[in-house]
Each structure stands twice: as structure tokens, then as C-alpha cells.
Image 1 (cartoon, one colour):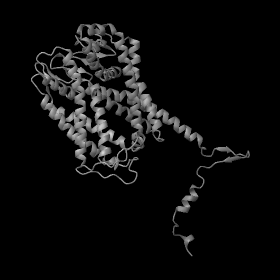
Image 2 (image 1 turned 135 degrees about the vertical axis):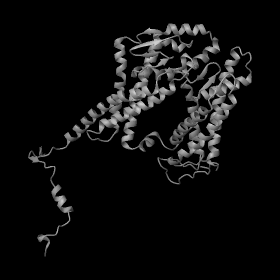
Image 3 (image 1 turned 45 degrees about the vertical axis):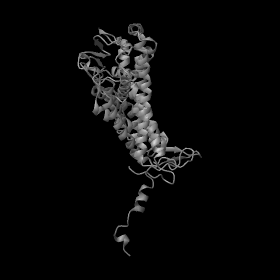
Image 4 (image 1 turned 60 degrees about the vertical axis):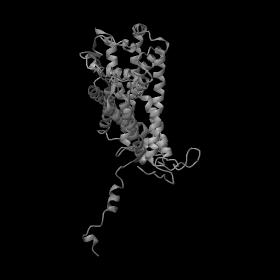
Length: 456
């Protein structure tokens, strides 16, 4: 990885481009891949830090900032950059803060995607098998930059978690940079074609089920917020953020939209989510206490009451099964013709993959807001994963089995059945023997056995 990877002279794996020249046909500079990755990592980190510094600086100018100088602005921007990588931090007399906005991850994710493409194009990577080295060359220095920012931004007011500051940016850079680098060499269709048939079918089914769940979760979150629009305005007016503060508050709420969609999906699955110890919001009812003054939280009904009407509760609980049915159908359509007893297994596998993804997302969509009453906020990752795997998996298994049975029936219906009469073009009846020629072929392939007939 310390030397430049040579590009193939011919067309590389997956339709790789000529890595020895840039987009304009100019030969690239010959430099070690680790240097290229370090340059890309510093550029991506610096760009994201500049964007967030401008936002913090705007809030610092618009709001009273007694006792907070430019050094505090830079530390706050660095802390916000770490939060964008899902790095938690600790506050004095409050505890650990892990309830972080998932939407903020889109900024570094997009920058790392572009950085991965740049490393592959300028680093002489010409084969898909070498993209992992390029992603690693990007992720290692990126994690080092993140660790340095964590050490520099720590203060008596907030202390970022150093282990998370190393692990989370590393994983994000490895994933986003690797995908960006692979996309620079081949289109998505060719990348998907590298997967085995059944794995590609399972992935297609999981993607279809997740699409249905995300769409339904977004709709449910939007409806809930629209029904509590009066409470939303009341909380927003009580904060009196001003013009600039209103824009920043709106951006903060937009960053929490993926969290809200994930919570809505957990609600539809049945386990629901919590906002504080001893609380729950589920289709069967909600038990909530007092909430922080954040406008988006007005969509949560306080007190003890049914979360949704009974009829709506049944409709909400049916969504995961519909998502599983859609995923099972996609699994069957993307897979080759399966045996009758195998198709339900692959359908359930797509549901299990869906549950695993939802479990991970649900785990990072929540987190503590201190060590007190709000130590438990958001859904339980393992409960969401297990319930989603069962509900989506069972529906996908049934649908995949039924759809595959129909495919088998159609295929076998197009072939003549054993001994079935088929009408010829001249009107004569032809009796088809499906085993015709089998014995003759077997005799032709079988070696002559010694015996009287073989004697001279």
C-alpha cells in the first residue's frame, strides 16, 4: 500500500478506466497511495470543518456570546464535526450525550465519497480488487485527524469520547470512501453483477423491504407532526430564537429527521421507542413524561394515552408484513429459478438482512441525554432487529415461496408432461416420451462390459 498501484493496460475488472491518465488525458503524478489518501483525508476533513465553522460563527455573531471567544467557536465547530461522525461527548454534571443527529452524517459521508473517488482516480488504482487498499489509505489518516480534533476540542464544558472519535470516523471513511472508489471504476449494474445470484437476490429483497418501511415511516412521522402542529408552534415561539437562530434551529431539526423516521419504523414494528426511563411509545399506547423544549418533540403525545386509534394501530402494524411481501417478491424476481423448498429460505434471509440493518440503524438513532431520567432515549436496537427479522422474514418467506411456485408452474406448464399428447402442425397426434433417448445415450456412454457378446 506504500507504492503506487499500477493500472491495467487493458480494460480492468468491472470496466475499469485507464488509471494512468486523468479525465482530460493528462498523465497523473506518480505518488505513493498513502500520500494520496492522506491528502484526500485532510481535504475532506478540512472542508467539513470549514462548513460547520461558518454555521457556528453565524450563531455566535447573532446570539449573545459573553465569555465565548473565537477559540470557543473553533472548539464548538470541531465538536460539531465530531458529532457529525456520531462521536458522543460528556458534559459536566450531566453525563454522556449519545443522542446525536443522523442527518449530520450526510455531510462527511458525501465528502468522503468524493474523496474515495479522487483517491482511486489519481492513485493509479485500476482494479476493483485494489479499492480496499485505497479506502484504507483514506480511512487511517482520516481517523488520525479525527483523534487530533477530539484532543484539541476537549474542554471543561464538553469532552468528546476519544475511542469513538477514532472508530466512528474510520468506519465511515472506510465505507463511504470504498463505495465511492468502487463507483469510480464501474457503474452500479456491474458492481451488483459481481455478487453471486442468490446473494444479489437477497440484497434486492432487503432493499425493497427497507424502501417500503422508510417511505411508510416518513409518512407516519409527517402525519404525526402535522396533527400536533399547534404544539410545535407553541414550543417554537417559547424559544424565541430570532431570525438567525430560527434558521439554525430549523437546520438542527432537519438533521434529526432520519432519527425521527427510524423511530417511526420502530413504532410500526411494535416495540416502539422510549424517551426516558420507564417510558414507551408503541401502537398499543404511550407513557411519557415531560419533554425537552425541542419543537420536533411536540409530535410525541405526553402523558398516558393510546398512541393511535385502534383501526389505525392495526393498519400500522400491517406495514412490516407488506414490506416483507414486497421484499420476497423482489427476491424471487431477482433470483434464478429455485427449488420449491429453497425459495422460502431465501425470502426469510432477505427479511433477516432487513432486520439486521434496522437493528444497527435503530441502535445509533437513539442514545442517552445524560445520566439521569433521559438516560434511555430512542428504540432498542436488538429488539427492533429481532422483531423486524421475524415479521419481515416470515412475510418474505411466504411470498417468495408462493411466487416461486407460480414460476415453476408456468415453466413446467410450457413443457410437455411425461406421455402427454401434443397436436402436430399437420393435425396428427404425437405422443411425447420425455425419456426417449436417455437409455440409448446411457448405453452409448457406458463402456462395453466383458461377456460372451464381447468375445471374438
